Length: 147
Image (cartoon, rainbow, N blue to C red; front, top):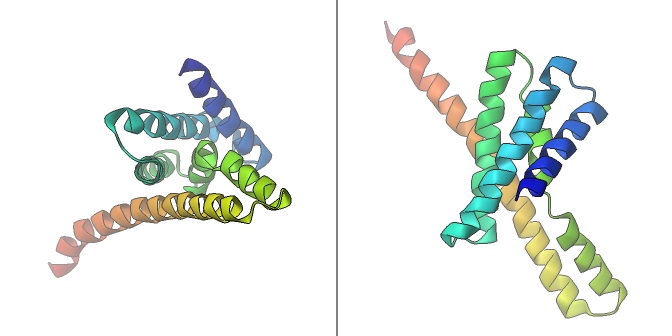
């Protein structure tokens, strides 16, 4: 578990460097990736399915990215892109392509479908987090506009 935390932190920081985020936000990008990996790793211990744990961890990364963007005054994509890197189903996509290359089309379609579902869970989680923050901001300012 500790090795996974360290690798997720370092890989998220590496993506921050790769995408030229401001230097003062690289550590926060690594923290976003590490938090996403922690949630993704702990939810299966509570008998959650892979899709649910991916969705919840992406939503938490999105919420954390929104809050860090407000605090550090930078766009939230600096953190959300780096935060979802540990969640990307790379090995599942590789196994899917390998099955197609080996002419095992049924297994390839099965794995490709799982890959697309995990990718959809990541996208849905990111949108959910952004939507929650937008609704909270809108509700907070709605009372001020009515006065």
